[in-house]
Image: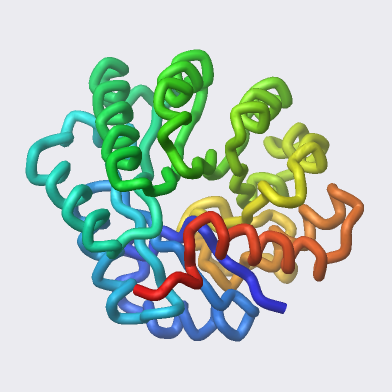
Length: 265
Protein backbone atom coordinates (compact mmCIF):
# COMPACT_ATOMS: atom_id res chain seq x y z
CA UNK A 1 0.00 0.00 0.00
CA UNK A 2 1.41 3.37 -1.10
CA UNK A 3 0.24 6.74 0.19
CA UNK A 4 0.85 10.35 -0.77
CA UNK A 5 0.82 13.06 1.89
CA UNK A 6 -0.18 16.16 -0.09
CA UNK A 7 0.42 18.60 2.79
CA UNK A 8 3.51 18.15 4.96
CA UNK A 9 5.05 21.22 6.60
CA UNK A 10 8.50 19.67 6.74
CA UNK A 11 10.14 23.10 6.64
CA UNK A 12 8.77 23.65 10.15
CA UNK A 13 11.46 24.08 12.80
CA UNK A 14 10.21 21.04 14.73
CA UNK A 15 11.65 18.78 12.01
CA UNK A 16 15.08 20.42 11.90
CA UNK A 17 16.85 17.88 14.09
CA UNK A 18 15.47 14.54 12.89
CA UNK A 19 14.13 14.95 9.36
CA UNK A 20 15.87 11.85 8.00
CA UNK A 21 14.29 9.73 10.74
CA UNK A 22 10.89 11.32 10.05
CA UNK A 23 11.17 10.45 6.37
CA UNK A 24 12.29 6.91 7.17
CA UNK A 25 9.27 6.38 9.42
CA UNK A 26 7.02 7.78 6.72
CA UNK A 27 8.33 5.35 4.13
CA UNK A 28 8.04 2.46 6.56
CA UNK A 29 4.36 3.41 7.02
CA UNK A 30 3.78 3.35 3.26
CA UNK A 31 4.01 7.08 2.63
CA UNK A 32 6.09 7.05 -0.55
CA UNK A 33 5.50 10.63 -1.66
CA UNK A 34 5.26 13.89 0.25
CA UNK A 35 4.29 17.31 -1.03
CA UNK A 36 6.20 19.76 1.14
CA UNK A 37 4.23 22.93 1.79
CA UNK A 38 5.77 26.35 1.24
CA UNK A 39 4.00 29.16 3.07
CA UNK A 40 6.48 32.05 3.33
CA UNK A 41 9.87 33.05 1.94
CA UNK A 42 11.87 30.77 4.26
CA UNK A 43 9.67 27.69 3.95
CA UNK A 44 9.41 28.10 0.17
CA UNK A 45 13.19 27.94 -0.15
CA UNK A 46 13.36 25.06 2.29
CA UNK A 47 10.62 23.09 0.49
CA UNK A 48 12.42 23.49 -2.83
CA UNK A 49 15.70 22.37 -1.26
CA UNK A 50 14.04 19.27 0.20
CA UNK A 51 12.59 18.36 -3.20
CA UNK A 52 16.08 18.63 -4.65
CA UNK A 53 17.62 16.66 -1.79
CA UNK A 54 15.03 13.84 -1.88
CA UNK A 55 13.97 13.50 -5.52
CA UNK A 56 11.00 11.21 -6.06
CA UNK A 57 10.11 11.34 -2.37
CA UNK A 58 9.63 15.05 -1.67
CA UNK A 59 7.97 17.59 -3.95
CA UNK A 60 7.60 21.32 -3.30
CA UNK A 61 4.95 24.00 -3.33
CA UNK A 62 5.67 27.71 -2.89
CA UNK A 63 3.30 30.42 -1.78
CA UNK A 64 2.31 32.79 0.99
CA UNK A 65 -0.09 31.67 3.73
CA UNK A 66 -2.79 34.26 4.50
CA UNK A 67 -1.41 34.68 8.03
CA UNK A 68 1.68 36.22 6.39
CA UNK A 69 -0.15 38.24 3.73
CA UNK A 70 1.50 41.51 4.75
CA UNK A 71 4.84 39.97 3.76
CA UNK A 72 3.86 39.87 0.09
CA UNK A 73 6.69 41.58 -1.78
CA UNK A 74 8.58 41.58 -5.07
CA UNK A 75 11.24 39.18 -3.76
CA UNK A 76 8.67 36.58 -2.76
CA UNK A 77 6.68 37.04 -5.95
CA UNK A 78 9.82 36.58 -8.04
CA UNK A 79 10.79 33.43 -6.15
CA UNK A 80 7.40 31.87 -6.85
CA UNK A 81 7.52 32.93 -10.51
CA UNK A 82 11.07 31.70 -11.05
CA UNK A 83 10.58 28.37 -9.31
CA UNK A 84 7.29 27.81 -11.17
CA UNK A 85 8.96 28.58 -14.50
CA UNK A 86 11.81 26.21 -13.67
CA UNK A 87 9.29 23.49 -12.75
CA UNK A 88 10.76 23.20 -9.26
CA UNK A 89 7.20 23.25 -7.92
CA UNK A 90 4.18 20.99 -8.23
CA UNK A 91 1.75 23.72 -7.12
CA UNK A 92 1.49 27.38 -6.16
CA UNK A 93 0.48 27.87 -2.54
CA UNK A 94 -0.24 27.59 0.29
CA UNK A 95 -2.46 30.57 -0.45
CA UNK A 96 -5.97 31.66 0.42
CA UNK A 97 -7.93 33.44 3.13
CA UNK A 98 -8.16 32.95 6.89
CA UNK A 99 -10.82 35.04 8.62
CA UNK A 100 -10.83 32.77 11.67
CA UNK A 101 -7.67 34.17 13.20
CA UNK A 102 -7.47 37.39 11.13
CA UNK A 103 -3.75 37.59 11.77
CA UNK A 104 -3.28 39.67 8.61
CA UNK A 105 -5.71 42.37 7.43
CA UNK A 106 -8.36 40.94 5.14
CA UNK A 107 -7.55 43.34 2.33
CA UNK A 108 -3.91 42.22 2.38
CA UNK A 109 -4.99 38.57 2.37
CA UNK A 110 -7.20 39.10 -0.66
CA UNK A 111 -4.48 40.97 -2.54
CA UNK A 112 -1.86 38.25 -1.94
CA UNK A 113 -4.37 35.50 -2.75
CA UNK A 114 -5.31 37.03 -6.10
CA UNK A 115 -1.67 37.66 -6.99
CA UNK A 116 -0.75 34.01 -6.40
CA UNK A 117 -3.74 32.74 -8.37
CA UNK A 118 -2.60 34.93 -11.25
CA UNK A 119 0.92 33.46 -11.11
CA UNK A 120 -0.50 29.94 -11.17
CA UNK A 121 -2.59 30.79 -14.22
CA UNK A 122 0.40 32.29 -16.01
CA UNK A 123 2.48 29.17 -15.41
CA UNK A 124 -0.32 26.62 -15.86
CA UNK A 125 0.18 25.30 -12.34
CA UNK A 126 -2.26 23.81 -9.81
CA UNK A 127 -3.00 25.72 -6.62
CA UNK A 128 -2.84 24.53 -3.01
CA UNK A 129 -5.50 26.47 -1.13
CA UNK A 130 -6.26 27.46 2.46
CA UNK A 131 -9.70 28.67 3.56
CA UNK A 132 -10.98 29.08 7.08
CA UNK A 133 -14.13 31.03 7.99
CA UNK A 134 -13.76 32.94 4.70
CA UNK A 135 -15.84 30.95 2.22
CA UNK A 136 -18.06 33.89 1.23
CA UNK A 137 -15.05 35.89 -0.04
CA UNK A 138 -12.76 33.01 -0.97
CA UNK A 139 -15.06 31.38 -3.51
CA UNK A 140 -15.81 34.50 -5.62
CA UNK A 141 -12.10 35.35 -5.85
CA UNK A 142 -11.21 31.78 -6.77
CA UNK A 143 -13.96 31.62 -9.38
CA UNK A 144 -12.44 34.58 -11.23
CA UNK A 145 -9.33 32.50 -11.92
CA UNK A 146 -10.70 28.96 -12.18
CA UNK A 147 -11.21 29.06 -15.96
CA UNK A 148 -7.44 29.51 -16.42
CA UNK A 149 -6.30 27.27 -13.55
CA UNK A 150 -5.48 23.67 -14.46
CA UNK A 151 -6.47 22.29 -11.03
CA UNK A 152 -7.23 23.45 -7.49
CA UNK A 153 -7.27 21.65 -4.15
CA UNK A 154 -8.87 23.04 -1.01
CA UNK A 155 -6.39 21.68 1.48
CA UNK A 156 -7.26 20.69 5.05
CA UNK A 157 -10.96 21.05 4.40
CA UNK A 158 -12.94 21.58 7.63
CA UNK A 159 -15.91 23.63 6.44
CA UNK A 160 -19.62 22.91 6.06
CA UNK A 161 -21.51 20.58 3.74
CA UNK A 162 -22.65 23.58 1.71
CA UNK A 163 -19.09 24.83 1.28
CA UNK A 164 -17.97 21.34 0.28
CA UNK A 165 -20.69 21.17 -2.35
CA UNK A 166 -19.68 24.60 -3.67
CA UNK A 167 -16.06 23.50 -4.10
CA UNK A 168 -17.06 20.24 -5.73
CA UNK A 169 -19.39 22.07 -8.10
CA UNK A 170 -16.49 24.37 -8.99
CA UNK A 171 -14.35 21.33 -9.86
CA UNK A 172 -11.98 21.52 -6.89
CA UNK A 173 -10.20 18.60 -5.27
CA UNK A 174 -10.46 18.24 -1.49
CA UNK A 175 -7.65 17.47 0.96
CA UNK A 176 -8.62 15.68 4.18
CA UNK A 177 -6.45 15.69 7.32
CA UNK A 178 -6.61 14.22 10.80
CA UNK A 179 -9.43 16.66 11.52
CA UNK A 180 -11.70 13.86 10.29
CA UNK A 181 -10.39 11.70 13.17
CA UNK A 182 -11.51 14.21 15.83
CA UNK A 183 -14.74 13.03 17.40
CA UNK A 184 -15.29 16.52 18.85
CA UNK A 185 -14.58 18.99 16.02
CA UNK A 186 -14.57 16.65 13.05
CA UNK A 187 -17.96 14.97 13.29
CA UNK A 188 -19.53 16.97 10.44
CA UNK A 189 -16.54 16.28 8.22
CA UNK A 190 -16.75 12.57 9.02
CA UNK A 191 -20.38 12.58 7.94
CA UNK A 192 -19.73 14.55 4.75
CA UNK A 193 -16.49 13.03 3.46
CA UNK A 194 -18.44 10.40 1.50
CA UNK A 195 -19.78 13.23 -0.68
CA UNK A 196 -16.35 13.70 -2.27
CA UNK A 197 -16.07 11.84 -5.60
CA UNK A 198 -13.42 9.13 -5.74
CA UNK A 199 -11.40 11.07 -8.30
CA UNK A 200 -11.20 14.28 -6.23
CA UNK A 201 -10.26 13.02 -2.79
CA UNK A 202 -6.73 13.47 -1.44
CA UNK A 203 -5.17 12.98 1.99
CA UNK A 204 -2.64 14.83 4.10
CA UNK A 205 -1.26 15.18 7.59
CA UNK A 206 -0.66 18.97 7.61
CA UNK A 207 2.12 17.97 10.00
CA UNK A 208 3.33 19.00 12.52
CA UNK A 209 -0.30 19.97 13.17
CA UNK A 210 -3.54 17.96 13.47
CA UNK A 211 -2.38 14.75 15.08
CA UNK A 212 -5.13 12.14 14.50
CA UNK A 213 -6.93 11.57 17.80
CA UNK A 214 -7.56 7.96 16.82
CA UNK A 215 -3.90 6.93 17.16
CA UNK A 216 -3.40 4.11 19.64
CA UNK A 217 -1.44 3.94 21.77
CA UNK A 218 -1.68 7.67 22.31
CA UNK A 219 1.54 9.39 21.14
CA UNK A 220 3.84 10.89 23.72
CA UNK A 221 4.50 13.88 21.45
CA UNK A 222 2.11 16.49 20.07
CA UNK A 223 4.10 16.74 16.84
CA UNK A 224 2.28 15.09 13.98
CA UNK A 225 4.33 13.54 11.18
CA UNK A 226 3.75 11.83 7.81
CA UNK A 227 4.01 8.32 9.32
CA UNK A 228 0.61 8.97 10.92
CA UNK A 229 -1.17 9.29 7.56
CA UNK A 230 -2.53 5.70 7.68
CA UNK A 231 -4.73 6.72 10.64
CA UNK A 232 -6.38 9.32 8.40
CA UNK A 233 -6.89 6.68 5.72
CA UNK A 234 -8.51 4.30 8.20
CA UNK A 235 -11.04 6.89 9.35
CA UNK A 236 -11.87 8.06 5.82
CA UNK A 237 -12.39 4.46 4.73
CA UNK A 238 -14.83 3.87 7.57
CA UNK A 239 -16.69 7.10 6.84
CA UNK A 240 -16.99 6.33 3.12
CA UNK A 241 -17.79 2.62 3.45
CA UNK A 242 -14.70 1.73 1.44
CA UNK A 243 -11.74 -0.47 2.19
CA UNK A 244 -8.48 1.01 3.41
CA UNK A 245 -6.85 -0.31 0.24
CA UNK A 246 -9.41 1.47 -1.94
CA UNK A 247 -8.86 4.81 -0.25
CA UNK A 248 -5.08 4.40 -0.37
CA UNK A 249 -5.09 3.50 -4.06
CA UNK A 250 -7.43 6.20 -5.27
CA UNK A 251 -5.87 9.02 -3.22
CA UNK A 252 -2.35 8.02 -4.27
CA UNK A 253 -3.40 8.05 -7.92
CA UNK A 254 -5.29 11.32 -7.55
CA UNK A 255 -2.25 13.03 -6.04
CA UNK A 256 0.03 11.78 -8.83
CA UNK A 257 -2.36 13.09 -11.45
CA UNK A 258 -3.16 16.39 -9.72
CA UNK A 259 0.44 17.38 -9.01
CA UNK A 260 2.03 15.66 -12.01
CA UNK A 261 4.27 13.64 -9.73
CA UNK A 262 5.16 11.12 -12.44
CA UNK A 263 6.26 13.80 -14.88
CA UNK A 264 10.00 14.02 -15.59
CA UNK A 265 11.76 16.90 -13.84
